[in-house]
Image (cartoon, rainbow, N blue to C red):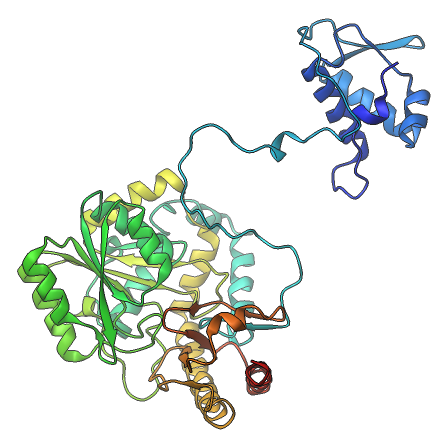
Length: 482
């Protein structure tokens, strides 16, 4: 008799039922040729004793195998491996647990996207998390949004509208968004100019796939939003970095490059540049648009947190000015409501939106129509504007509070410029305090650091004053131990 206690692997901590584990192990033994067609299996009583499990568990495993035609059961006599199983070459068994199929590596050729992929950790999150500029979900009108969502799932006409046209975004949301963006950002658009996406990153990816390709050229700021750089690089395009200073991306440097090289696109974050938070000056905005017209390149304008400006009225987007349709405008509701609410948008000429929609359908047939229509209702009823007005006042107070904390408690260790808007500070550490040392602290997680600049983004909007003070005190204690 084969040593079934070694052939069958059971992990009682696994979420997979034990009877299923037994069945899978026996199937694996049959596939490997350890159990040949016609081989007798132990009786349920004998096998349950060997495996130290209840007899009913073994009976359930045998029933599963019988249902799938792996075994034949002769009632009150014996159980055998089914005759129809092909005879396989036996493999030597040993005392080690059999390896699950997916514990092996995929050894056939496939494309490597990132050599340094991070594993998803199931351990509890660290005690202190510094995000890169998230909204405070506790302030968001999520309850009203979900209430509307639930009501739509119970109405026949709402169900109908939630399942039509979601590949471009529901018509209701695109119509309401066209009005909203016209009123708040001066964009002269129609619903046909809008594509609803699962956030700004999807919009960036889609635009990159259509505009760029192997050998094409795109200019980005330095430093820049890393995820955008990756999306551009994956097209095979050549990235050229130009400096970002206190006035934003250097348009003089862009012009020098354009004189020598054909540029296909410039990616810019004019309102609050990521990660440095600086605002592109009016002179450079005009210069960039002049260069776009002269050298025929597209402008990909990422306006991820337009709504939060504290010291003055915000500049209107580049897309809100007069241009020839060469500006791809990207925004998101994640910075307004909740990072987990994956609804973003792209604004562009209709023919470009049509092709982005076609590309999007290849990887994602559509979004959540109920959620999109619920968001459209919040926009139409003015709830979104009321929320932004309230949140803007609170975030302004939190910015000023953190400004005072950093100056009073951490001024010796770092430097920064208080941002005119947005949801984060760009904090540069003194040379004797390398940012990588902070990353070595188990209790601390910083979402956006830059070792080259020895800096990190300190998001303040998601935390109240007590929470901000706690984090600053934690950082001070950490710096004192350096």
